[in-house]
Length: 308
Image (cartoon, rainbow, N blue to C red; front, side):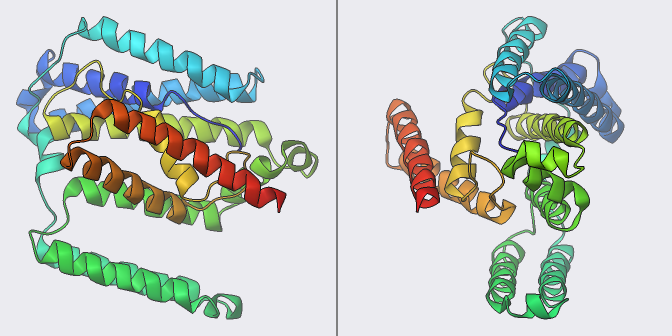
């Protein structure tokens, strides 16, 4: 949509802290799976409200997304510090922690990869135009095969990976095969032209930022599950990683261009870079400098390709 959300890291921290507080201070950890679901639901509610407010400010009040999300970034970080007393909250219950420590059974994992390969084949071969995109089908099937070998050769797919890939797959389908997805690209390409063409710009923008709030909240819950607690500094500069991954994946910051598959590739690249630099002992300060250079270079290459 040519917008940007700088608040995702702070919303992640706020929602993760809310989930941890409900687990530790409200006794939800003693309620097992029910408590984990309640904590997750409350965190999603907070994230949804944050996204709904951001979407309202952008779509109805016509405030620039950069300014709105910058303000929400500061607000949510401040709320995180307030409700936590600037202290870490831990440990959470075993049921919530299972999200990052448990795995889908190997048999189900294998069936899932087979279903992905079959679905990719059916989608890409549905029409004569799609049959010419054989390379995409082959690539997806190869990735599914590699994934099956890696995960099924170990203990299966981790729940947290399954959840992330499910969200990504659903988003791909929505963006490619629904009116909402076409509206998003149309708004990013030219907002005024989209509005004149009958696209419900305000509603589409509101839904987009609302969904962003939900996804940031879900990421916060996943982070709490992974580290068995919440810290007020969680998600700091996460928006930089998100922007870098998106731009590396080929999405234009000017809007209207980009695919989620490219973003996933960008996520993998950023993950390899972050882990690689950490393994070879590169200081975190230098890592931040490197990320900034990557973002600037990626945007420059994008603008250069558009001029051509």
